[in-house]
Amino acid sequence: MTAASGTAPAASRVREHLRRVDTAIARRVAPGPAGRELLNLVSREFRDLGQVRLERVGSARCGTSVAGFSDVDVLVVFTDPIRDLLYSPDWLREVTNGTWNPADGSLPYSLRNVLDVLAETPAGEPPAKSLLPDPPRPERVFGDFADRLTAPGRTVSGFDTPRPDFPAVTFASKCDEPSIELVPGLEADFLWDSPEHTPSSGLSYRVFPGTRDRWLGTNPEQHDATLSCSPGGSDYTCREMIRLLKLLLKYAGGVPLRSYFVELFAMRWIEGSHDLPARTVEDILERMAALGRHPYAHTGRLTRDIASVLAALAEQLRTCTAGGRLLDTVDLTTPETSGQTEACATPAAQAECADGVARLHEAVLRARHAEEAGDAETAVDLWQRLLHPPGGPRP
Image 1 (cartoon, rainbow, N blue to C red):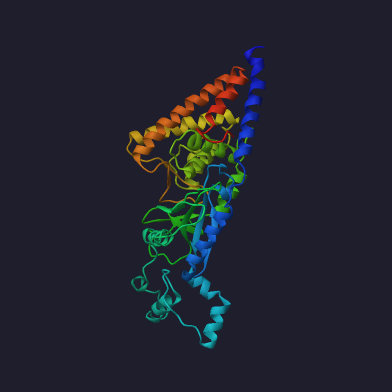
Image 2 (cartoon, rainbow, N blue to C red; image 1 turned 90 degrees about the horizontal axis):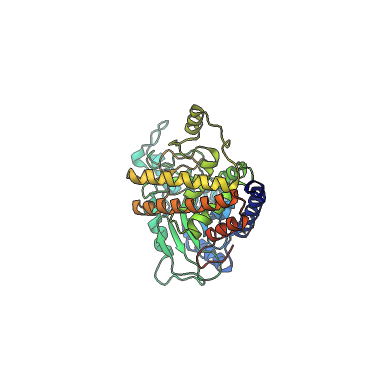
């Protein structure tokens, strides 16, 4: 059999192997009994602050998690007290019969605050900004949030002692359930005081601490819809590539990239805009048009495209490291004009990531060359080694 005649069967065997791996890691990641008890405890802990809503966000919600490795991310949303009061039948009833007793809570704006400001504002004029109470700052909100969850003696069966790591408090699992990361969030229609702190994306309706001074927006439903609408490549879906890249890079390869960055970079590579320094959808469309690029036109088969993504990522990491800056990207579903998602936490970690991605790219190329030579056995064996985390279950 010639190499040419063996290429198609080899490609088919490699693709079937990757499909089996993805089927194993695509299993739903969700809290088990210990995790559900933890979330019930969190709801009770913050009940005195008003209505608190727990929302699953991130990869476990959107189908891009890696079963056996990914955490469950939960946004603890503190709802807008003004809107809750204004639309609450109980509040309206209490105001009507005179039994309402306004009191300032620990949330940033109570209705009492607003009424006091309006009382001091001349009719027909906007309230003076100096009269409004201080808005919530990410650092303070996270600090209060973490202090409560890490109070001395706080233990939850099945989890290690909670560990604060801005912007999340991590409950690492000690059982066969996934770990849980809790992040404080607010509804995006709070009364913000200035553009420096307001989420810069109008598409977000929840916010979380992006930096210690800046809130970032999130819209999980829109992100999920964008993943579903992405055409992926000729033989793979967008979610499938993201899951395999996370397994290859983070869990099997040990490269300390942020999972969310990997997801966003893969989405933008599939779209064809990963190398454009654009911050809005409009910028991206204009730049792609100027370059004569058509969205999704460059995608092909999964093994080829994984190699291409790794090559592009390694090049950008090296360039940014040499230039003394951190590589970042923008979430196309809630594009922020300020505060993008960085690939790594520190310059040292980024240098490590650049070397790690380059190493994995070379390994993937070896698997590709074996596949193209019609050597299915070698190609499958190389992929198996790449996707088998040291000491972990064989997917």
